[in-house]
Length: 346
Length: 138
Image (cartoon, rainbow over the protein chains, first blue to last red):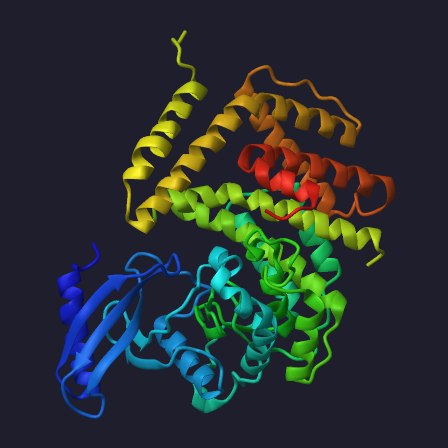
């Protein structure tokens, strides 16, 4: 059972009080929609004395007691990653305190207000101006993220997942997707065909870099003036930067505004040009198309994996169950995109 | 056998209850969302009950054409599902061996895959299918 809200309040007051060096009083505590595998709470706290005296609007993230996704970072890793991103100038929420020894571990970061729900980001009238500049802002953020060196000792990011030795990032992911389907005992000719194409056409990766891993509309906090924060860092890994660049282009992340290829907010070419300019690296267009196809495979398979969490009884939820049938949307797109490549003589 | 309402009619009744009685009474966003999802799940079941048998038969026929073979079709629906699962698995193996990588075999495979995923979407999300085929945004 999850602890009661009073227990949580008490735990937070004790922890923040000790971390901030002054008595802490929680004045607001409410759950907010987070990922499916962790709890996220909005926390308002007043610290009475010490260097951090004053009011703080925070977000608390912690793992749920039951579920752990083996491909996701734990909270301590996510905290260190936020620190590195924040220091690199990325618009990441400022991480505040890590409770590494709590059970389960959690951390607190500054709360950034704004819209993060994808369907609203691509539609709300008040965000029209933001949408005009969002693709370029996204490209710049990606370039900044991709500059963080995961091998630097002092960043503590050495344990971030990376491709198996000798495998290109694309073949590594294809292998993981094959393993996920096998574990589900799914034998689907469409996925099989897609995997065969993806394995035969894997692009060379010039340089493996640190990726956000889930960079898309829906994981961005947006205000009327533009991008405010990049959130949900738990799928960070080392890989081909074009995986990150192509991910927001996956059709489902356009939230119904299909004709705007970049996240339902912009066209592809200006976005890629902005990324090239900010990163100083030329972007192979065919490799972006490849990674968009891979993105559809990944999300289509992930839908089935999520449904299994319900089916196994581990996490009963009609929402997770329904994802199993959403997979067909990504399957359709996967087939359509591969067929286009074949027609155009990839 | 069973009296009316039929299975599809019963599911529709439960869905309409959620849509017309429960949803308007809910204020909490998370609960509203979960209930919308539940109503949509029931709608998927309604469509599947109506389409499942003809879609299984169509898939059986397409596999016959693709494999240029015509094994006896099991009479019970359950046995047909099992036989189809085995045929899908066999098709996966042929794809993995590269037997359908080129030319006419590849074209026939892609046509089969397209018909199959379209049928899935007729059950799971016909609006997505219409949008995808029409190339239009929502």
